[in-house]
Image (tube, rainbow, N blue to C red; front, side, top):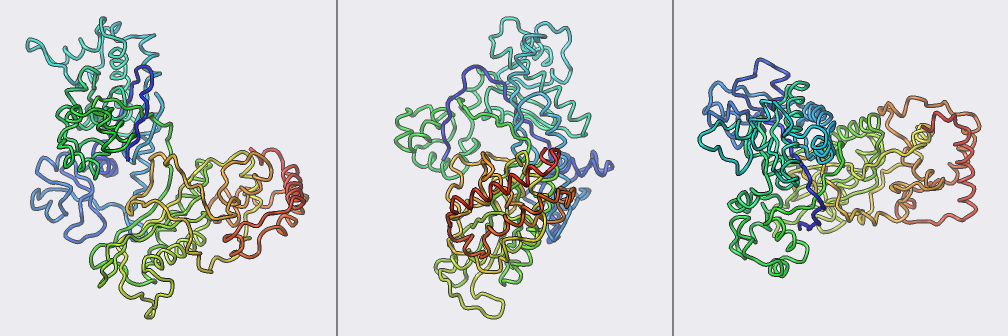
Length: 588
């Protein structure tokens, strides 16, 4: 359910930037001959020409829609160019689109706090930049205004006496008698125009934008005039925008909550919510959601732009609809291996480029049971601490699947026929890595020291069935940029602080962090750079640490065994020896 957040004090300038038909633009940049031609990007699955995942505006003019498949699109527009999405490991490879999106983000982040919301959309908090512009070069002092800025759409602004719309926009931007909020908004218009033009110059991509006083309104505005345009929502135009906005068009109201508002309260537009008091909405939907509904009806939103250029999680998924549903353990393991290989590559890349480490591995699947009255039962998502290395991720993910399958089938003694479980089908698989945090100072040096064989033993044993359940993930999602829930996973397996503790306030905690790096995949280049360069005294101290490591994997994963205080002191002392024997540049 949505949660109401208090509106921040003072006027804010928030922009939502949305790249136009982004996948198509990326392919047109690769193949310039496609520019200006009706183009669509299709899935790697060639059945009926492949499903369309992005349709260019030229193709839309012919009536081509994303709901079509390639063959149908050719019937509507015979000259359409269908570009297949890149394929790797038997599934769509979005790397080129992801990297292109990062190019855009790096440009937009130059002017303000930047939150990457998805592969092709970004929120910007431009309040500080707008305030600086207003103080130094206010719009009313400008003799000339950029021609692109004059093409902006200002909600509620109408041309007077048939005047040119650009002249009307310039008059609005340069008003001396405007209130502080509108003057800041005018500065925001000029800043966003400059950013959009810079994105076009450096990347060849066009984008559309919405500019308003909060994220909610900016998001609504960005889609109103596309492509390559921008729309501004002054405070005076908020009511007019929301009064006629269909309730299902509002973010977070497209699902069950929006349906409930329609069925229970007869609400069809956001403006209809104004009929109800805050108490009534709280009575019907709870305190937080009721307050949130009351606020959005008035255009109020206190949601902050989070300073985030990197994703909160990495993931890889694939669906198996209809007759392609997986029905054997061997086929499931094959595809899990493919997904885990991609995930491991991205984790290593994130580690090397951004010095970040993930802590939690999650498996999500969609399944059904044939000839069973409970065929709609959901396949439980499962999570465990993440161990770096492709083989380890593959092994742990398969064990998570087996634990989930036993729970899904309702017993632990499922009979098998060869490699096939009777009566189940898997229609989607997804594996993700989350709880990603920066590697703290000193951790890299310890990681290099621990590079080598897995000191925790084999994971071939079945994972316990009480592995923590995880929130469902989108099987097709490749990465998540959304903020983690405020209630994060707190109750991991007993004794797993060695794996997932984020805080490293003392050396004892630092050592626990180091255990995460045991057996890093050699493909992570950062783990290879200075392997074996530790001083001899550091190597000697490692043996004492190894003696204290758990030898039985089941014990280390299933229960917490308190370490006696003298053992803790011994381990801390050994770690101090190791750290102090390392040249200082290893700890940077």
